[in-house]
View 1 (cartoon, helix red, strand yellow):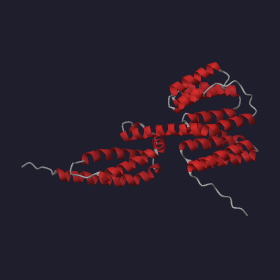
View 2: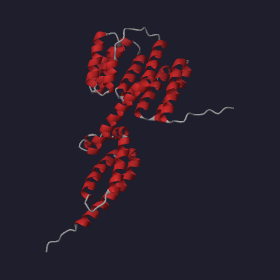
View 3: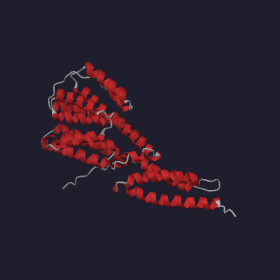
Length: 311
């Protein structure tokens, strides 16, 4: 006699397995940054949970609680998309997750968040950034050369239209070949598209036009930041910080990098170090800028300002 399996029992078994994996994933998501495979494991578990939830759905079975818990886990991963992508990339596991629906959603969220941060910086931070760059130029007594009009380049970059941004920057470089800012944008946009050879060629030209290593590193880092290349911008900031005489602009740039990453405590610390380094160097203007950025960040990021006790 052929034995049949009660579908009710099968469904209950699937639910038990689903809940066990849910419990395990909720525990592991807290510590996923502590192990090389942590982020990958959570992502793969979310893929598996989606499949198990679909299998457990039956007209007579209420899975709303499990569905809510899975959605909560997914929202948590998507909110930290940039950090999750960094963890996967650091472990060199991107290729292993190329077919993962969850990881594809995380990458899309990371790109969207990066664009929002660039947009926020452009709308809220560009006036401060422009003042900062102007003061540094005046402080170092750079002569005012003819300037390229890079407004369209910035707008296209802000919208994520890197090809159009690159074309606009190249057009301006042709019109005003002596403006290093156009060359810096060309280099940053090539870098954002993965063309390192073309980026280096443009940066060599910008460095030649600027004829000042400090300003080149700071301006390049600032431009990289505007196209979302935070790691490359951080490298320029660290290069400046490594030299005592250029530590203040280096920390200022690092603060911008951490602000774009959404790491408010790290950004606050960098701006504080920029103000301290500028004070020690006697650079009052840069110190004011650093403190202004610090105050703005504390206010917008909900960070309580430090109170210095009075005697």
